Every structure is written in structure tokens, then in C-alpha cells.
Length: 184
Image 1 (cartoon, rainbow, N blue to C red):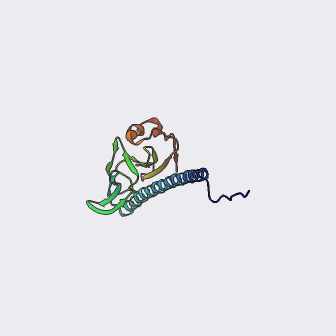
Image 2 (cartoon, rainbow, N blue to C red):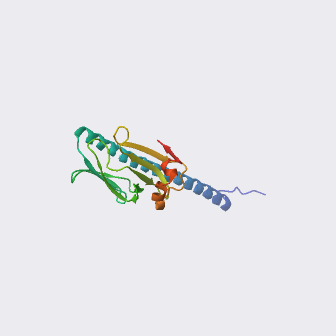
Image 3 (cartoon, one colour):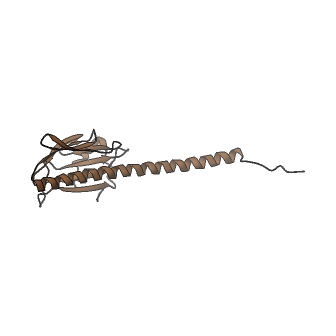
């Protein structure tokens, strides 16, 4: 009796291979999405801090005050001299932003003073796809040097810092003492 040589895969082998490849592709796509979000958060953080530091220095050296509009809903910063727009900075659109002062805002109008400070102390929270704040950029005014100070914090374990209640969270002792946040 001659044995027939089997050519190709059996149905079970095909299903197993397809399942394994699908799981691997899902994992790769998930990791890619996390990487893209991190890149966008880094881009937003750099744009915000770089532009505030630039206008802080410009205001100090030119002894001029600049108006700043932070719009979290439209995801942009607008810098003005008087009423004339000087620069418009577009932030990554796939992220969400909240500004917290005494209350939570989607929009804040402030100014950079002639001595390189700000009209308000505030924080900008950056949210990725989830409702959890990923980063917090805090702007402090009238420190010892009377010069704008900017601190960047990464959320390590502050699970209460969610989009819907960021104002309540911002006023808690955990937020004030930066518990669950790592300064970068």
C-alpha cells in the first residue's frame, strides 16, 4: 500500500496559525497606538512649554506685555501684542486639554508681563485617548525670582485625575502636593 503524501495545511493548522498571527497583529497595533499617543503628548508638551518660555524671555528683554489665549477646545495657543496676533500654535488634535485655575476651563486668557511673569498661575492637563490625565504642565508666577516658572509632571499613579472631574481633583491635597505625579 502506498501512502499519499499530504500537501498543504489541515484546517486546524490553518485556524491555529491565523489565530496566532491575529493576536500578534493586535498586540503590535496596540503598542503602536500607545507609541503614537506618547509622541503626540510629547509634541504638545514641547509646544506649550517652548512657546511660553519664548514669550516670557521676549517680554522680559523687550519690556513688553503679551496677551495669551489658551483654547483647550480648539486646541491652540494664540500670542498677541495688544490686539494684534503674533503667533498661533496648533496643538495635536487627537489629545484633549483642560486648564485649571480656580475652576476648570476649556479656555483661558492671560498675559505675559513685562518682567517675564504671567497674569495667572494655572495648570494645563493633557489627556490621551483615555479619560486619565497623562501630563500636567504647571505655570507658577511671582516666585522668588519674579520670573515665570514652568514645571512638567507625568502621571504615575494619580487615578483620580480624570477629565470629567479635573477641577475637583486639582483642588485636592493629592494634586497640590503632586502625589502620584513625577516631575520631569
